[in-house]
Image (cartoon, rainbow, N blue to C red; front, top):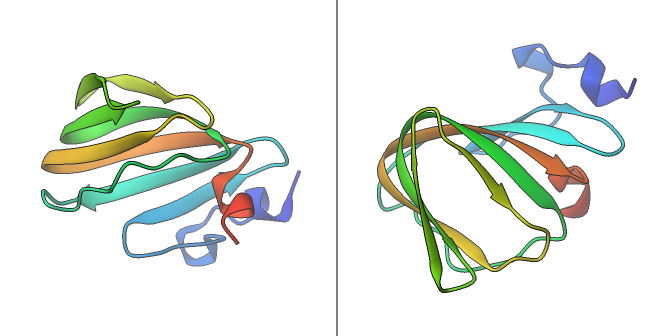
Length: 110
């Protein structure tokens, strides 16, 4: 078990920023939560060196994949962003989601 996995308590979250919190992390997968993303907090098209699977807790967003696919996301929906896929999120209604990344995203972004 990694140190990050042992530090799941809110006060000991391994990494945070204004929009997301890393909830737990192992060698091969990381778990993070996106809280209260507001409309207008859209990101530009980008790709990552990790795969993302997510679950929508609340709100509504559009996931744009590879410039030609749009997936509507609402509470209870799951989604997948393949490794290195061009994508962006357009927030329609205040949005929260839990995501697992493999490998752990925060280890590749340092």
